[in-house]
Image (cartoon, rainbow, N blue to C red; front, top):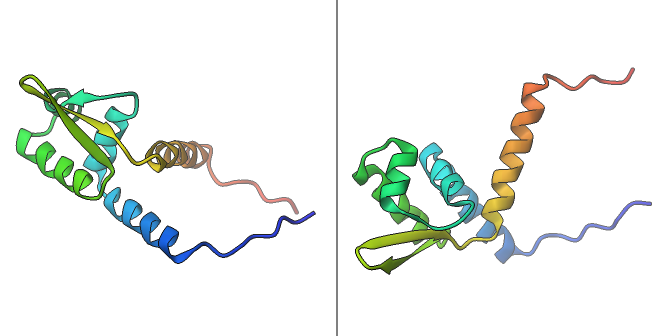
Length: 110
């Protein structure tokens, strides 16, 4: 039996497009991957990306501006965390798609 699909509401499409557009940079995806399992300081993110402090800060600013991450201060440290719930699912999809690509083209039934 086929499940009836309803059109996606315009505001949902707009938000999804905004998140997808924001995620369209390799360093931003790497930062989110590092944040996937909890808060990290800027120093930890710099170490995890092997990028400069200014490059990491610039990308975090973009992510924060789109509401994908948020930050809080703890003493001298600023800790970042993911606030957009779809991000973990999107990272999982990327991993899943990559596994499909590694297996090669799907065989077609004749």
